[in-house]
Length: 210
Length: 210
Image (cartoon, rainbow over all chains, first blue to last red; front, side, top):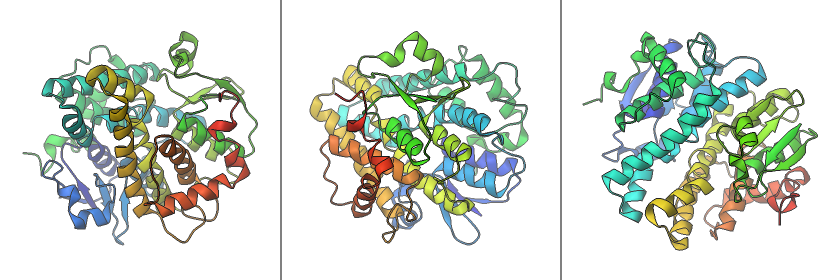
């Protein structure tokens, strides 16, 4: 299968890590978001949302939206699982993941920054403050949702919440966020980065990284 | 079970509709987002993300994040299903739902509007333009993802994508959006509103509506 992705995109990072954990072979096609590759007609035909990642299966089916792709991978390649079986435990893991995937990431996207610049003449300082505001709010909520006695977010194996966490902490560090108030989140980040399959998914390790 | 919700919240609307479709009995506790009820200590203990809805099960378990709650309900009360069984079809439905739940709603939240006002002195006209921008972009992507020969989004029964669509079209109309460019979306909206269980979940039909 082919993953259309961008090295620095946190949603691409999540999906790369899941593919690696599940041992699924894939090749990458770089979509340079800064250059606007996502708006090219051939890419828009694959992904009308003009975002990354897009996962193209061997039969040509194109799957979009990283959280939907992660669910697909967990159903199609169940070992190791990204989610527990019990419905209540699944809901807890999903809620933690969504505190990043819905409450932080959509607000800190490149397209949002571009709108803040064009509509409100946002300065680089405004942009940084905006980024840090949503990460701080979302991480405060997430920190309170996490147990403090597990290696990863809810168990001793990495799962859906962990993939969202490791990608978002990368982004938080990029924006100069101090993370000392979030001991559960940074503990989980360290456990993820010590996992070879996740470390191989880091932005800096991708072929399109500068 | 008890649903802590707000009449006008589109995430609350989604969950009310799912509970009604599945025939699950629940009572509602109003959380007045405009008055700041979501920041009260007793509510924050239930929902550290300070959002709505929160679903409290009969054993006291509090579930947060509407999309995680919908997945829980679909697992715990499988009939009628909100998602198809086949992993690729599930991913398609989820991607359509996420084009609203991740690409529109998080940008159009009350908390985002408050930040635009306090950081950028956004005027009411700025706010309306911001709302309409993200709805237009998200709906354009979604429209292209939808088949044009089904009653609901992907089948002839309402599912996860439909619940996101009917709630988001309510919000779009509130912000004065013309929706004539989105024939698939408005066809699905009409089918949803003709379904008594969904109509009963409309904001105007809630006990805390003015």
